[in-house]
Length: 301
Image 1 (spheres, rainbow, N blue to C red):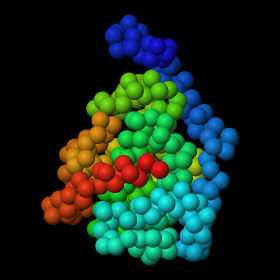
Image 2 (image 1 turned 90 degrees about the vertical axis):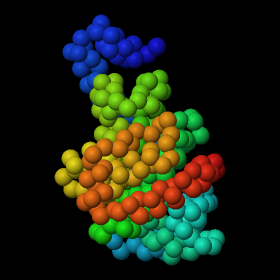
Image 3 (image 1 turned 60 degrees about the vertical axis):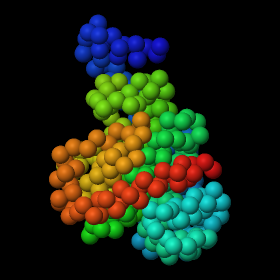
Image 4 (image 1 turned 180 degrees about the vertical axis):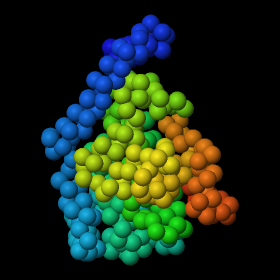
């Protein structure tokens, strides 16, 4: 058993003081930060992600710039087309090229998918069944958030989709740092408390740090950090609320052991504040139920 896990177990049994555990927590905050810094230092973040982010953050960029970049990456192009043909977006036919996908989904949503697919390459789903399920969960949350954004004025499908896809990336980071510690807390409803006690921070904190390290837009950073506590966000409150609601809906309609989106009174308030009625809620839930197999196929390439 790793020493940190052993000490944590002793703390839970009352055999070690909180002061000693506090020291452990500080050490692990440093390790989380160091892990993320090493991603940047070792150029683990793919060069193509930097190019895509450059296009995303350039207001003068056009769909031709992005389409050209995607077209030269076969794996990325294939996943973008899978997303475009998603049953959740209700396309009646078959989208066969990137140009069609951009026209149907919109430039902003295609940007989000392209960025997300490159982040997935940093933490591939094939190394663990649990990691694959976390990415599938993220895909479902991203899809719900993107659809919800169509009903809500003043929101961006790009940011809502990408924030949904990356909202739990901090949990994947914890897995990469220490598998055993990750599995010790993966399916508990007091997950955030355990994460703070063991890693010194929550997966929301770690995910926000990753988004910042990777040069993501501010909206992605804030939404990732506050997806479990939308009322604490000082900005981008609507986007944060949408992603938080999407995660809770995902657990309600498509439960997985890795889910951590508990439905709270805050979500009831979000429904009222965003004007999401019962028909819209039921419609999104119905589409999500048909998305399970599609989401699993999405990560089988």
